[in-house]
Structure formats: C-alpha cells, structure tokens
Image (cartoon, rainbow, N blue to C red; front, side):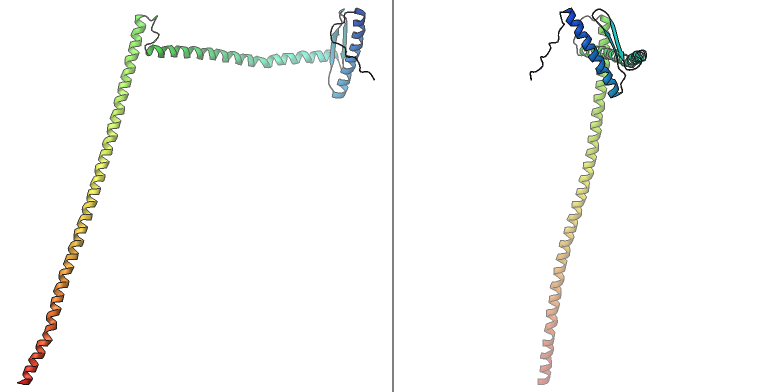
Length: 220
C-alpha cells in the first residue's frame, strides 16, 4: 500500500482548486468543532471569511451568547491587568527616586572626601566646610568618650588587681605564721621529753641507795 503523499502547506495558486480545498477543509473544521463540543461539553464558535469575503459560521449554542461571553471575558482580563500596570508604574517611580537619592548621597560623600568639587560656588564650599567641621567635632568628642571609658575600665581593673594582691599577701602571711607556730610547737615538745628522761633516771637510782643503806645497817 502506497503512503499518502503529504501536501505542502502553502497558498494554492489555482483559484478553482483553492475554492474546492476551502470547501472541504471548512466542512472538516466545522465537523471537528462539533465533535469537540460534544465530547468535552464545550461552547465552540467559529467565524470564517473566505477569500471573496463570504462569511461562514458555526456555533455549538447561540452565537450571540458566545460572542458576549468572549467580550465580557476580555473586559475582565483588562480590569485584572490594570492593578498590575499601576503597581509596575509605582515600582518604577520608587526605583527612579531611590536611584536619584543614591546618586545624590554618593556625590555628597565624594565631596566630603574632597572629590568632585568643581562647579561649587563659594557658598557651597562654605557649607561643605561647616559640615566637615561639625563632623570633625563629633569625631573628636566620640574619641574622647572612648578614651575616657577605656581609662575608667583600666582603673577598675587596677583596683581589682590590687585587692587580689592584698588577699594573696594576707594568705601568705597566714601560711608563714602557721609554719612558725608548727616549728615552735615541735621544739617545745623535744625539751619536755628530755626533762622527763632525766627525772626517770634520777628516780631509778634511788632504790639502789636505799638497798645499800639497809645492808650497812644489818652488818652493824
């Protein structure tokens, strides 16, 4: 079976063949539209003009109702798009204002650095000088405040260190006194033991003398 030859999509030059093709394709298009309406429960409307300006229409329901729905839908779309357009306009305006403000602030900063001073009048330069002097005064005041705070913190730290040193010195003094007391108590204990030993020895010699005395009495 031979494959069907594919028709090239381009304008048909022969007028008679073009009219025949138009009639066939129009009927096929209306048939497909009817099938779509039935299968999918859709409202379908087709408006078709031929090359000789002849009107052909198809509608699954009332053509007027479908066209009114289409017109109402277009109006709703336009109304829904209006807030977006307004919002976009506001955003564009705000962006332009912010860009202008950023450019102005950048120029002021550069001039405070001594850049881009061309075009300034004497009054402008005088105002710039006043701004620099005011800024310098604030910087100096802030610097003095920071230095004062650092000195205060250092003094507090010094007082704490001195208190800790005093506590350590007192602890060392207590330890030294306790050590001296231990040595003194130990030395006092040795002298007592020596005296007691001497007394014991003297007491041990007494019975011998007593016994010798008794012997001499008996012999006499």
